[in-house]
Length: 603
Image (cartoon, rainbow, N blue to C red; front, side, top):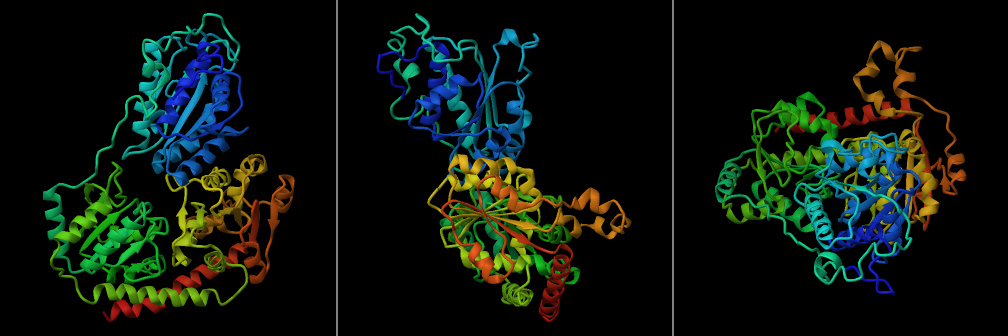
């Protein structure tokens, strides 16, 4: 609730009053952090935030880095985070983070300052059309005209904040945008008569806010399925001989929901294919984590034909899971999710049930009285999982630098309460292939799968819980893409972050794509300069430049030591020979298929 200053005044001028009211209502709606980039036009917001001890304010010179820092912070903290910048192109630098937030359902509140309406399209400097700057990527847009010291106008402002936060935090959570038109003065200068001393008397709640929360509180709908849907789902699962549960990214919000989904899978005799970002990956049956290694084999994918698929969460990280689903597109497939996204890249004619997966799992478990599942069906997948574990162990026998060894060392280094951010290029795929899972929280920017802003996202993730140890694994090009984030780490006081950079001399992921098998990949061809983009950047020098701890392990013992938690930020450069890594991946896939194939053929 907005409190008058020591002199009894609400604010020295109407601009600062509007800024204070806006931030006060954001706090009432659950915002606790503001990521601020310096600028003149946004000064009222900066000054109001600095004076509000309920807000943790971090200052970022680069708006693009600020956007990704806020994204990591909002996802890890589980609440909306605000961003503020000046007018002109500054806000445009938020766009990549806004796009990722839109596709990952992360609540961001973007505050862009703007010139007053009469200066738009009039040649005023640092001015451009900021109306709907982020297009369809925000859940709500609102232009705020030049402030008025009027009780009804301030009530309207608070109502707009509530409207935006309802949209930002609902079942279809995501970013929202306020474009704030500020006229002079942009300082805390006292303007006599600008803010009437009795302004709050006529409308205390509108001007000062409510002590108990937002001016106009809301509650989101409870996402439950209809009785008819539950009956149909129950009949479908009760009659399934070869059911499968696919848990994609974000499938389980917490341990209770994960247990509910797992309980349903066990009840109906279904293997559960757990994406590393699902919140469900554990080394226990019937959870399957080695699917990437054997579903890429056509014979195995054909032999493991389901008759019902229940999908919770987003589209799986592993391409071979949804190619396997597409191969069996005639099979009845059900997606259970609260959001409106259509997780069906194979266009299989999926049945979408808009409800909370944990609620549906519990309701179905209470209704189901029988299961027709083949007694051997889940066991076949369990044996395949054990075979992949054997292939993983064999892949790690050579202790030279290889991603399987890195993720094994990470698994040993991370305590149960740790959180891990992985890049969306090769690291998340390698995690999927080699990591059996555990209690650690794993996240990735898989909304649009970009490599931009990953250092900043890692810093924001760590900032959400400074006492919680955080690791991040990204590629060398991702680091170069976000050196600004690395530069910000000491100034932000970042801590408890181990940033592992897999340096394979460029864009290693392209070595696994069909393009690598074409004439372009021949010596002197276009493949290396246009796609692999090799570089000779000295990462040690980058760490030294920004005052970051640095390690470059060359042996398993050095790797284990380098991965130990630090009280600050440490950059660990893990140098991998790209061509040898590709060969070892292919060897692993071949060995896994060799071990799994007889299990499918003889079943």
